[in-house]
Length: 429
Image (tube, rainbow, N blue to C red; front, side):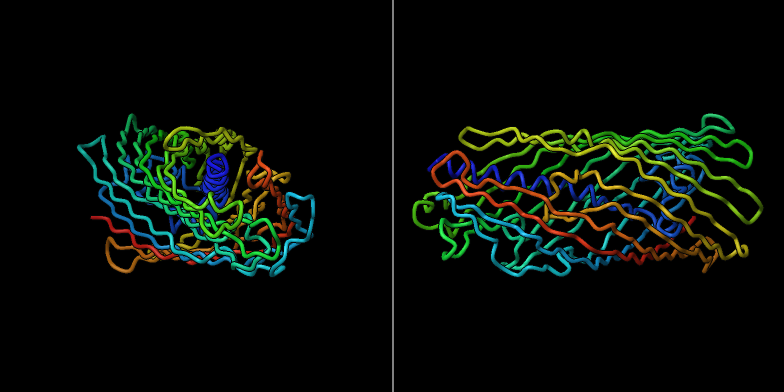
């Protein structure tokens, strides 16, 4: 039964880290209110502290500036059963019982960000920024058909970046940043007992840890055109935590225990290229492309206190997203903006879980900036996210390699849309 415990803990750890990966699949781009308003189409080539997440060179000539933003994210989605089954050790295969439709499993949330920068002499600048690039919660009811894949999934991150930038020439700026990222996660999953007449058990895993990465970038000012490029490193993550398994009865009762463990994995690098063209005194056109190296998320290495572990391979794919947008200065005190972005999912169709249901998406944004006082600007934005319908296709082997082996085959359909409301303040001083 010790092996059963380790297998149960491995399953839970795999699910938790899939949450982290899919969180990045549901990567929160909401790091700038201006960016939301133009669908993240010009941030790498824009100046100012609100663009620090995309380019550390953005503060080289922005002066003393502070920014705070708040983004309310609402998701209206449903996940519907499409013939999921469970196979018990005696070979009996039955439909997964429970509620066939899970409304709004992705919980609404708030993503804050903050940044400040100041010049050091005529050519240098220092900056500090705080972001929440992965931050969400999904919840399914205890009776949901998806419970053997997910009940509760919560992931919270805080990324603290220290940035240095330099004005190299009249037309070229460069920057570099060092990131410290705190990750905290909690997962609950239902575990089947050996009879459909018995209530499910439950597994809960929680873990946290600090990890580090870096970013570099440059901006070139070529007359009315500004070019920007940046690279954010892949980040090696190590989470330490505990696995709790409870509610299993009969031959599975010895699995009910608490063990410590750790898991290691790598989240992707992000390469960004963009341009801003000041077409007229009032109109600026933006374009931006990101290549996200999700192939870095190749495997999860799980280790348990007291020995033992397993390497779990993943199937994520590199993706390319892109957006176009515009800024239009109605007056010296009011600027309007709009944009559209295509953002594909890195999750493969052949193995998509219900834990964070994902799909390709189009994002449409509108926004405005108003000068409310000298040196103080108010940013506001609205965005609509249109998720393409996608399929849940995920098999889980519980107690694999033992006489209690039980397999679930979850098949479902995901439909949904998202809405973002953003407000921010920028102060020069």
